[in-house]
Image (cartoon, rainbow, N blue to C red; front, side):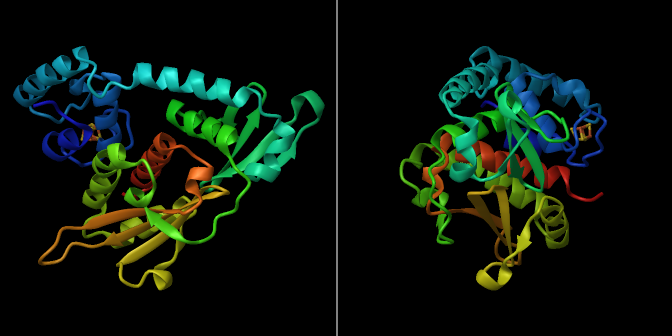
Length: 274
Ligand code: SF4
């Protein structure tokens, strides 16, 4: 049986987020092992026998190209860049929001991104504080530029599976987004609240009283995301559902919705206190 990010996180890694591997969370490390072929012994806290057994499985799945995203990421980025290259930066604010900064040949779009800002220019996309964006973030930002319709969010929410053409991605949304997040914050609504606030989340529990917590994020000005959380109880395990505005497909393709959701997971995990 191949090892997915969730398998590795849930069954193999210690889940202590000690950072000895150089990543902020065990989940982030698991993602890099599965998709970027990082050696499992980068975590010094797995017993050597388990590490050797799992590494054999990982080597086999890497050789078969399973879940390896390096090549896919490069291809997707080249394609998305090309798609966005014909966009006039000056036209972007009225389509996707943000404001123009700089002059003439150096003009850039400054766009809110979660709780920070990104700059989109003729030479690429970067964070305003010059921190790098990962390839998947760049892919969905370029896709947003290329696809971004003018419509504004309506405030009517849809579950991922209600969005057309998501059937083949529903499993990925559960495996890479909803399950790891629910496991991560099970029994810890305060930790979720703190992480959510740190990345610009707004408390919307009044609008979703059937959940135990509801947080609205604004990854991009026209692409809000609602996270609903039900905590574990005697009968049920914790559950997380992401909702998207009904206009989301005007702004992102399905793959990009998934990448953006995965980025939300990473940010919440990285911003969990302790
Ligand atoms: S070294 Fe990394 S993967 Fe291992 S327990 Fe610490 S944070 Fe988790």
